[in-house]
Length: 153
Image (cartoon, rainbow, N blue to C red):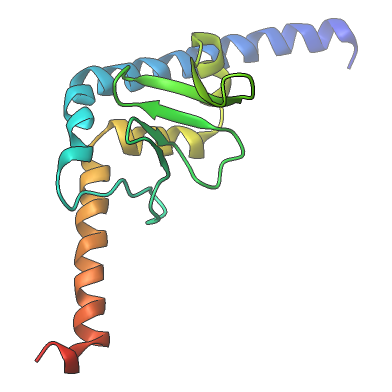
């Protein structure tokens, strides 16, 4: 294969890839528009926990930013107030983390990772997030009843 052949193939593949990520971004934005206000209220529900797709508690920053995936190397959060994906980076001069919205172009790159996209949609899609919180609480109750049965008599 020479460079001209490669360029012809790569151009077509990149157009197709861009079309796919554009659809993913639109689906993400639709879910944010539909569920953003509800997501914003969840930290105020007693007993609600942001649980990831993996069943583990998601980190949060001041109950305003929910980390997309605790095992992810990047600090990408969903901003409950701004209803968008945000990077939180520590500013040593200010002494705290500063939010920077994820650009549209960065969304195209981030959404190439299907696991990351599914983690995002788990949060903004709302249903999976609510089910995960209920499951987590149900499991905690069952564990307490089993492990501490003699003390609960």
